[in-house]
Length: 206
Image (cartoon, rainbow, N blue to C red; front, side, top):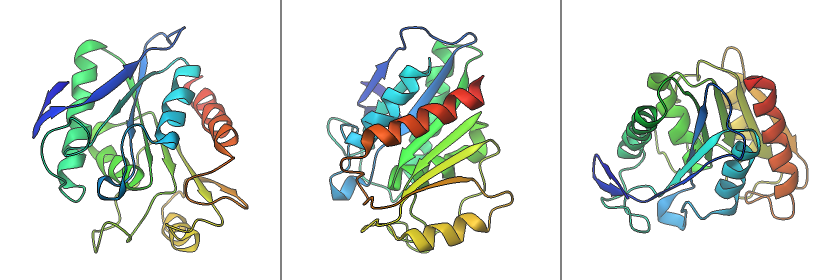
């Protein structure tokens, strides 16, 4: 339990067996709190596991109002503040560490939104929504780093075409991996997804 901007934040920090030197940590953001999203989500767990296998510390946490985290859902604004707070919290414990921001669905949008102040060395977004769940919020700035986006072509929650149109407008656009026959929650394809994320991290982190 970490004292945060809106009360205590429930979090789980996992250390890799062979940490990178200098250290790297990832902040993992889960899907929408109002639709059952929590840090126990399988895709969020996969992101953390892929980070660990790449020698990266992985911090999963529950957004405000989820699980034992205090506070109330704030439409992505307070949640962005929490990501920024947790990056600073980790930097206090791992001085000089590099940061990777990771997120799934709503959590992907929040982590991209947070990147503008945090200077990550890599960004990983799984099925990021632009418009759905976030109303008329402006499209976030492009993260200032290598950026991987993975999206299922048959996503029944976040429309693939809408996401691709937004991504194509970024300069430069992110690296987009499209998986055919895959829905929003990557049922039966989580191992494949984890391999894609791990390979990206290993390329970017050296």
